[in-house]
Amino acid sequence: MTMRGIPLWAWAAAAALYLAAAAAAMEFAWHRGLDALTDAGAHRLDLYAASLRSELGRYEILPALAARQDSIKTLLEAPRDSRRALLPAVNGYLEAVNKDAGSVAVDVIDLNGDVIAASNWNQPVSFVGTNVAYRPYFIDSISTGSGRFFGIGTNTGEPGLYFASAVRGGQKVLGAAAVKISVDPLEHAWRVPNEAAMVVDGNGVVVISTVPAWKFTALAPIAAQKQAQIQATRQYAGRKVEALGYERLDDWRNGAWFARLPDRAHPGRERRYLVMSRSAPQAGDAIMVVLDLSAARRQQQLAFAFVTGAFLIAALYALYAVQRRRVIAERLKAQDALQRANDRLEATVQQRTAALVTANERMQEEIDERARTEQKLRDSQQELVHAGKLAVLGQMAAGLTHEINQPLVAIRTLCDNARTFFERDQPAQAIANLERVGKLVENMAVLTAELKAFARKPETQTVPVPLGDAVAHARLIYEARIRDEGVHVDVDIAPDAIVEAEPGRLQQVIVNLLGNALDALAGRDERRIRIGARRADDPARVMFFIADNGPGIDPQVLAHLFEPFVTTKPRGHGLGLGLAITSRIVEGFGARISAANPDGGGAQFSIEFVAAESRQ
Ligand code: ADP
Image (cartoon, rainbow, N blue to C red):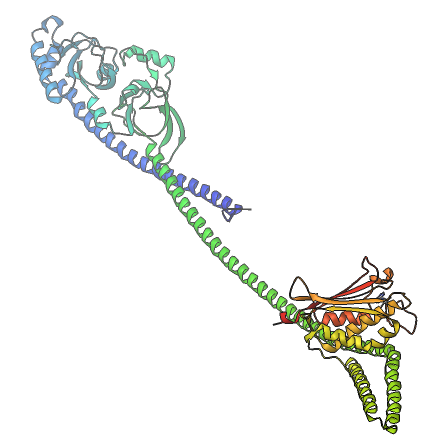
């Protein structure tokens, strides 16, 4: 099974390889991306820790300096009712210090926790008169000498970092000086794309955050008891600290870990981030950076795209190569097939040629054989014709004997008489007798000449022969029979009845037909023979006929009349060859013979000859 000329297993292997390569590349890119993120995160944490340290260090000293101020000490030492006169100077000092330091407020707290002087003494919202006895920074500073605290101002509602130092008069603690600074500049400075930074205090509450929504939320849900404690310090201005919805997931390298947090960009949704932290004791508990995974994901996508692209190119190249190979293979196959077909064709042609050659040779042999047979046939035909002629001669012998005997007897008588006439000295009569003898001898000579001509072997060349001559010669042969048997012969031959024939053979034909007619008339009372010839409607033809008033042709014989050895004559009288020979001779002239019993009775033989002039 193949697809586009590549076996399915190769496709499957390529797909598996692709999936493995894509997975490996994505994994690698993911690791690389995360490593880059953690590097950046570590760098950020260093930076933020340093900035936090320097920022806080700047203000940490401020309450300690204020605590050394004599005017403040004096104020705290002075009885409650005599403080009023001292206040303007202290307030003025605090105001000036606050302004110089850039803090939110600087104030002085007595041992009761009451704020008695503040830099914002003349502001609409002033710290003066506020009691901060419950605030840990105050409590810590009185008891340990210094305190720090992240919290939301109870008066102002603004979050800030509080530092406090105890004010001492000799060994005695008189009260405390405190400064509140804003974390806004830090949050501003830390705001960078694709990451969030926050500071978590000891309670696990986010006190500085570049994401405003996360501020004053707890990483872990705060237990009810702790919640009550926080409420007591009013650390977050009495707010209930909600849980951020932070869930620590699996750890990553370099001290980073994955965590689920609310999506920064889409409130209400959650998202996975990479988190790193660094302890920051001066700020509370820890600084955390929350890093977007999008950069790593992008690297992953890039790796995927790269691998996919590379595979696509490789696949396309493979397809192209396979296609090319297939085209070449097909071309070769087609060439091969063509060559084979050609070879086959050549072999077939050779076979056929050989078969043709043998067939040709066989045919040539057959032709030769036919020619030989034909020659033999012709020879035997000639023999037959000759034999027929001899047979007729035999038949004619009796007639001839009579024909010759009669003149011989007449000559004998005429000679005897001539001698007598000479003896009686009557030479005129004797000469007349001798002349008659000469005439008779001449007639006999004609007769023998005809017989010789008849017995002669035939020539095959045809020449123009007047039918009248041929009939006259034939008639001469049968002259004695005609006369003796009292046959009335009626001849009507047109002078232009000249036909293409060989004279000897034509004579043989007419002798045959005349003989047959005479035979048929034997025993008849009235004996008549009609012989006629004339040009046919087609001037190239001459119609000849010989008819008798005999009994007609035996119907049983009629159909086979021109076949050899067909005869009705008694043994010794007929061989049945006459008409067979006649028809062959006639065919040899290009003529046609036919026989019929006409309505008037008797028999009629007709021959359609080729007219002599028509032969060019
Ligand atoms: P043959 O004369 O030796 O019998 P032919 O071939 O000449 O042989 O004639 C064949 C037969 O045709 C004769 O035996 C005869 O029956 C018939 N035949 C030929 N000519 C005539 C004719 N003029 N009238 C009637 N029958 C004829």
